[in-house]
Amino acid sequence: MKKSPYSTNYEGKPRFIGIEIEFAGLELEEIVSIIIDEIGGKADYKGKFECKISDTEFGEFGDIAVELDASLLKSEKLGEYLNKMGIEDEEYADTIEDFLSKAAKEVVPMEVVSPPIPLEKLPEFERVREALHKNAAQGTRDSVFHAFGLHLNPELPSLEANEIRDFLKAFVITYDWLKEKHDIDTSRRLTPYIDPFQDDYIKHILQPDYNPDIEILIDDYLEFNPTRNRPLDMLPLFTFIDEKRVTSVIDDGLTTSRPTFHYRLPNCELSDPDWSIIKEWNIWVIVERLAHSKEKLNTLSETHLEWLENPAKRVLKEIGKKIDNLF
Image (cartoon, rainbow, N blue to C red; front, side, top):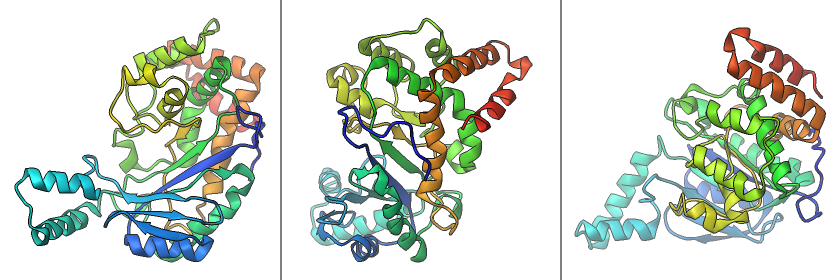
């Protein structure tokens, strides 16, 4: 596992990371059993589509759920929906619930959401990934409908505006390199969930004189990116810092406030025995290393701006070579 130059979080404590794994091919009960076999815990079922596992060796584990765009598969909301349709008989409701569950399996992932894990213990969490693989969990490349991802949620090393800005700069500079290294599947490229940052925002934040305070940094982000659908979704972090500022622009009830990045770019390759969470972390950590190396960050910012202003120069290819040789 490659080390980040940032070992502590914004409070000076050891950094934690959260993991979200989207996949198909297993029933909720199977997944719960697999996890408890690996890391212990007690199951608390919230319905046919959710279960919370507590008292694992990693602490409270979080929710395992099937998520649908309209959240109809969550039991309470499904019940409200059925009532609006005039369906109150429990037998009919169960039948429709089962139908919706089966219909959604091809396109709606099951999701394992971890608790915050100490960064140095991330390799231990690979046991969950290995167990899911051994039990034939299906990942991104097992179906053209599986636009599934692995989400990494590492804590911020600092909440200072200039440090957050530098992470954003490092990310947009390395984006094409990251996309190549992660080998992003076509099914995911075609969905809106990881739409890239647009050139106007990239040019804005890469300017040498861009030194915003936190309020301007958040306002600029929301102006150019009024959406959750970015490969590096900053809304959870900005909601943690200034919830009113964010919800005045985006208040869809879907963003969870937390002091982390929400990195959504990697595929979830659970059916591949050579794939691992650590492999994806090792790619992401280049962003952290570049954000930490201010001189290199400034040099590559200039190079990237040059390419954006004059793509015919094809400078981006040279950026890729420089990133490969950085660390």
